[in-house]
Image (cartoon, rainbow, N blue to C red):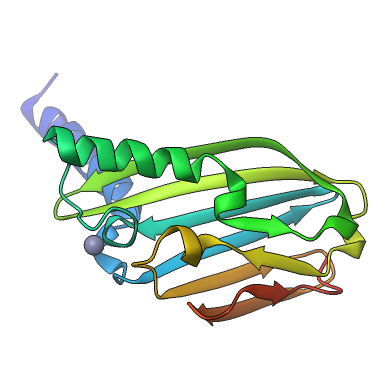
Length: 172
Ligand SMILES: [Zn+2]
């Protein structure tokens, strides 16, 4: 293999790596106090996905190394593992939890907790209210940016700590 070809392959490898890396969302862009919630419908399935700055969940964003901090992260993951600590879909839609996940990711000076909850709803079109419990569970949280992708309606809501529910009538 001639040297020019070797160099060009190397450049190709480097640029594809750089590309893959830049596609990853940077945690630098989050705002402390502001979390996001995406609600996506697919037929009878509703997926709730939270992205929350570590600051809002445990009060710090470095990687937990001391026992005390590790316990705070574990405790937070436990709270995030029960959907009722974050959101409750109103009973009329007969939604049942099917699966969930809760994780923390660290990147440089920032960290984020990511959690998701998948429900099957027997009467999804009857879903009128989603109760928001997130602010009760995590007092550092100030705002929630909510994006809803329903089959009947797409909507964006920004809610403050004082708000206890969102009205989602005719979204699904
Ligand atoms: Zn941060």
